[in-house]
Length: 258
Image (cartoon, rainbow, N blue to C red):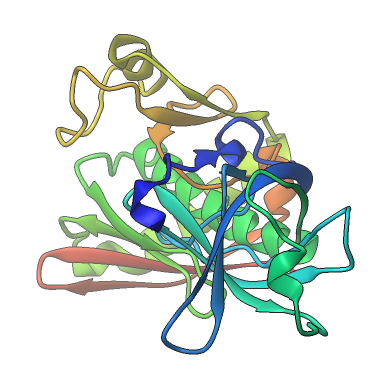
């Protein structure tokens, strides 16, 4: 049933800072672990992916007393599944929520703020690596969860330079945070996207595509589907906690202020 639905519009692509909106209810599925999954025509909830955890919050129906608590969000085959449960549900709830009905969405602001700051800090470290002459290290995966955020690069830093580079990275990052700079994101034609990224896009991006590029101030941008701060200054402060080398990879672990 769900696979016949049209792809969910990712409304957070258009505005990363909207925490309340409306959408159209399409379906509710029972999943194996006992939870339910709500599917809408569009969503401001960010699904887990790209190294960023999912948003949480709730969905309500203006025409009834139903309240769906969103515990997890995932994107599968173009559809966004909001996993959770109906709070204080009573018998007959399924008759109160109909396909095509408008619902209201509310994203947990504190969680979104933390996730966006952690994700943005990871991108900021990419910029710092370039500024410090380490652009030969190719960005790999990132983990922007509160429990142990890090960014990883293909290539290594000589062992005798590790402590120096760790200090330099932290100083450079906090200097950029202090200077600030507006953050913007947009779906762009390949050529324009390449310009936003300083003339260089990863090879996995097709030249016929319109990638979403996130740009931090005047610095080169990068392709990303996540949510970010409105201004670099909103990251507040960053600490590089460790740089470790393993199997030809450089792993930079970091933390941000509360």
